[in-house]
Length: 112
Image (cartoon, rainbow, N blue to C red):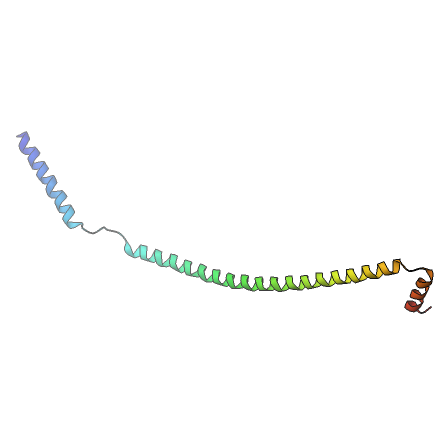
């Protein structure tokens, strides 16, 4: 008798497992929820991509401005160096003037 009960229970169990396998061939998931989530993430990615492109354009513009300003600074530095050189040359020349040359220099310069 014990053996009959075990066989019946095993048979019922096999039938239930077989029925479960045959009726649930699809995975039950909320695919629409995942599609909406993916669409939402894609929208955010697109927005970030657009912002990134705008920032790249601003960066390129700023880089151009920086290069232009750097060139202007280099030009001013060059002019300062030229002025320093000419001033030093004049100072060297004036340092070697004697008294008569100094009087002539200041008379010509200030009209006295």
